[in-house]
Length: 323
Image (cartoon, rainbow, N blue to C red; front, side):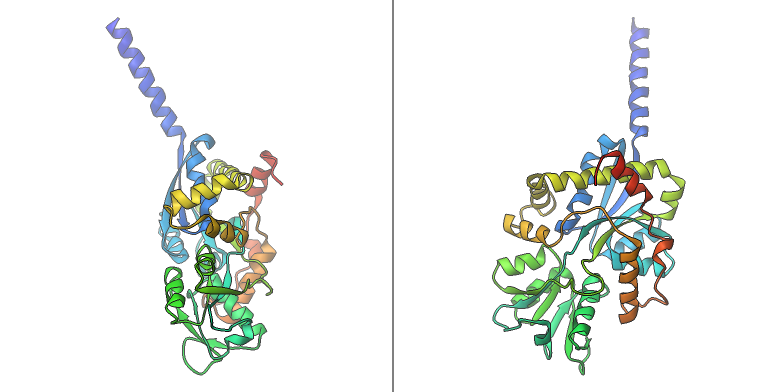
């Protein structure tokens, strides 16, 4: 009887071990923004997808690209300009999906009397260096016939700060306006120290798409695992789109630990809705605008059709009946 008991225990251990091994690991890089919430949620439902997702949260997009280059990540969530800059400098990555769009707003200090982009002439405007928000600021100023620099002598003096510091600088009246992300821009408006000037989507870029990036190695050498991950991404995103209450609870309480209000979340997602899709055309236009204004200091704009690969996304959407 003891022998039979031992055999049963060994069998159970072997089954448990094989089950753990069956859940292959995907290493995911992510950022702490409201519209990155569905990406974070992937790890919660990953066991249902037959995988384990290890999420690593970074301070800024370029840090994710550095980790990818170092072989520390398989997949990363990034604004498109970070992916474009990395690809232009030789990073072996593919854009495989888009997970949110929009997510930018030009916000002026309350009482500044700035009501249009033209009113920024002679003002101090804060933005995060090297990101999509800098690209959009360059584009909207150019369309208004204004120049910008962090030095004197241009129409608009730019002050480069991290996303987390832009609101404080606006609140302290150290800046006249900021080009800000979400939920920070919504918070500035809802707390009363900022007013919306515009959502900067009337440029050739339109609404910028946040991109899901996969390493070429992962895409080529582990296609089955990559397909499982993409299916899990579509499930997580569809869940957030169909169940806004769950999305709000997860983002506000799990990611932000109660630091943003319900109003902040709803306003943020209204300006940066969850999505799935990205096209080579959008990435090419974004690349060309970046190159034109020297953002990312690229030797040339990468050719989008060579590295935007949406086959896994389309297969996942089809299998889940997602339009």
